[in-house]
Length: 117
Image (tube, rainbow, N blue to C red):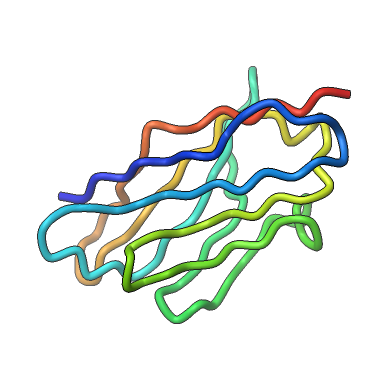
């Protein structure tokens, strides 16, 4: 079982920056990959960024060039640096993680990001 705790959300103006963090804890973590999804009001949850334990990343087209996902595997922590934020980035951001050999993903409770225009 993996527990994920996100932090770093908040209110920011258009063009501002935020850095989200997510720490994984549990026994025998063996994290394979971590990432971020988001869910805006009235919309489906969508993938934002994923990163492997080796640092290989994938981003949604809507955030490429603005968001950077990084991982500290020794600390079981994933980060999402969000720059040049836009009102359409307003959402609850959820961290997720996968373990080696475990066919399911684990999710955090989410952290709210609000970008004012």
